[in-house]
Length: 517
Image (tube, rainbow, N blue to C red; front, side, top):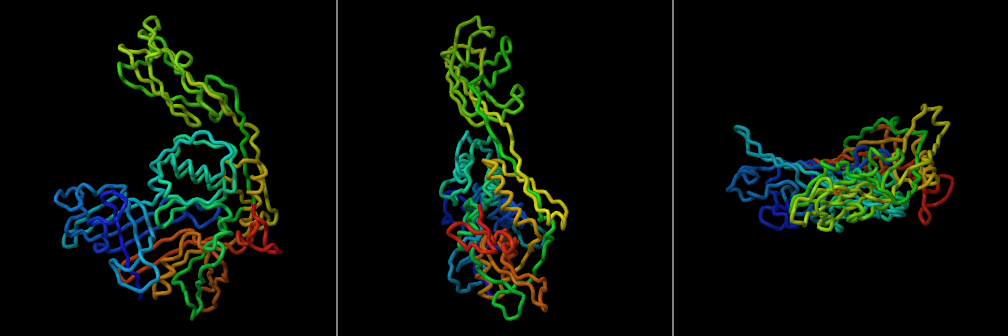
């Protein structure tokens, strides 16, 4: 069996590189198991999830014991350290001459380091890690009101709000322009998913640790996704073979009724949208030199039922919006001018930070937040159905979760586009390939998410599934140990689905192709 060699690298001192002592842990690695991709092999219902990594290490010296003060890594065995698995020409396995060197196949951040000791056995440690989306899960993002922005521009806004580095992004230009967008305290991955759904595109983690956004035309315009990169067959004598193939149940992915909604927004007149409820003897206090932060939210329990957000908050103004006094009933010294004010605004809330710069205890006898409210009305619902499919399979409805579709025209295009693909049964596969020689190893290492490949499974002496189709790789799972490297790909169909669409400047318009929106 031909194997590449591997590196496992950890940025223990968190300085942005893998070049320091003990950061190449390859010599201690027993095995590696890693995953990247979607939670389900479907270009419609599959969602990007955080990649996972589990590495088993030789810990005979105790170097990975976080409480061992004499250990070389003591003080640096912490979560969120960057970790990367590479395929290359040095490492813990066996060398084979490849054209690639030190190619990343997974990058993420450590979540756990678990030393394990068993009587009579070698001391080991397990490192567990999550991909970039796992790290972003910890970020609750606020994005202020944005109007007439492309989906990729909004993805940028979310990543900015999450503190994600600009160099660690790879974004296609979005094809949908969102009329109005905001989000408040939402986990960043969920916010990204909403925009991917609106675009009918994808969010994914790249092998080198970036967050990527692919627009809905990516599968037609990028070579790796528009042209088959390899053919795997069950026929004897084929260059590339698989060792296992499983046909997944196609029925759950048949949808013959699509329902999508659009939001129509109205901006109201400037008004007081929130008022602090405590006044008089209950007025909140701020001691000398201290700071308090108040959160004004809209909509709230006093709002109209169709209120959804704030177009623009008005910066809190002394006297108009805030009064302070040395007495709770307002009969003492007026301290309003001695209260410092700063605000932070988002689409549904404004944080009002008040600092008492006076020489006495301050009572906040009035505090309100003004702004222009947004109401939602006349939600348009679009329905697209296919009678033939309903007769064959029964009614199978897909309620489109795209939250930010800008118009009923685009909602209609979204439904029609997907209905043509999902109204019929299409094959979905799980395929396992083993690195039995250099050709297979090269494919295992170089194939990436959303690559297009051809699968032949129609040999009467082989799988005999009647399948000779093109598929997209939706998820990748590697299992690596000395003398063993196995990959499992979850595959969604392109032939008979999105492969029959074309975009202007790409593809040929004939009886088997349709114009994509």
